[in-house]
Length: 256
Image 1 (tube, rainbow, N blue to C red):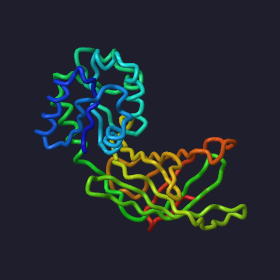
Image 2 (cartoon, rainbow, N blue to C red; image 1 turned 30 degrees about the horizontal axis):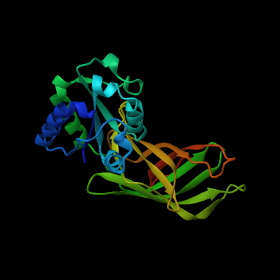
Image 3 (cartoon, one colour; image 1 turned 90 degrees about the horizontal axis):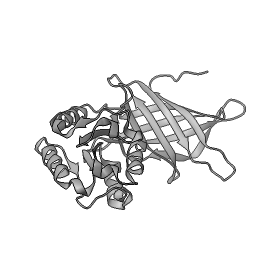
């Protein structure tokens, strides 16, 4: 699914018009004609939001009246989705704080928004294959291993890796539990020319946190990196944050 249309049910006519225009351009939209702000957290809508490539956020006086609108758009951005605000009868000054830094277009310019969406869809970096990685935690622990990156028919990617932990002696000891991520799309980063892959990181089948990777806009794709935010293992543990670096398996990681 290409575009998730987020809107107030009071703007049904506009939302359905945009839906038809997207279909006419060969794009697959998701539109729930019973949706209003707040229902984004129902299972169906949440699943479609996670699987979409980007979001058209229809900003109107109707949607801005909802107390859930900030929560809804905050969730969209937290998932790393590209967001295109579409103004319906209001100005850019009306944008909620979480969307204030994004470029908004009036509804009369919706065809330009759709063409830009089509252009982004055509450029999906291919990072499949085997990679070496090194992960540095904020407590100075280091991990390394091999990661396989897969791609499905929807241009979604997931990572599957083995890992070794650095011992006090400076050696690396293999850890039995592998790790993997959820399927996710590579999307444009609205703050730079890079693209982003933001996904849930899991170890041993349990969700552990978020991995956010920056992908160069053009190949060859020999290296890239990003950040990992892990959930605490216990109530006394603090948050764990680290940087991760990937290089093609036939290259060498930089050592300190």
